[in-house]
Image 1: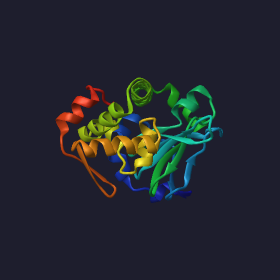
Image 2: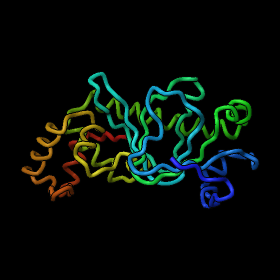
Image 3: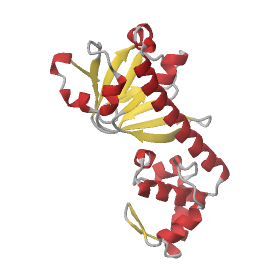
Image 4: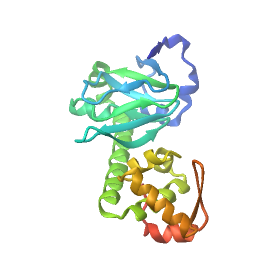
Length: 228
């Protein structure tokens, strides 16, 4: 991790509308923390030291399960807020955050958050918006993964990614292992579903690329469910 001094900070980050609404204090003390590919940003179980606001790059959010394996939850890009639940509830870090590529964060220490920002109505409104979005998407994904068949889940995943909405971008990947984790199944089971869809001429598989031939059939299989 590299800390970039404030006077070297590009003002491009501050052009995000979300940041303008989030921070009304022009004297806000912060750092820019840069993480490189495969570097851990936040480690599950450790204490949180402040708020992390992703302003560039791409990160991967995972959580450990009882078997010791990691469950992929989503990918994140700008603007994403991390450490909000842990900081407010004074909890240890709930999920592991890893940089997929070079990624920058605005970091604000815990002391300033509790002494200043938690009294700022504009900040709290934006924080609530981000937090409830995470709650909504996690709840929806959990419900689909618990109640729907793997065929329906995979079709729902394809439809969600196709829509290109916020969460569709956050779960988009060409890696079948990651797709299986996102929809709550094994890679072996997912491959069987992919093979079935290929045989039924619903999709084509070319190396790491999946091409949908019959979107109408995929939408019917999804039953209208979406991961968003």
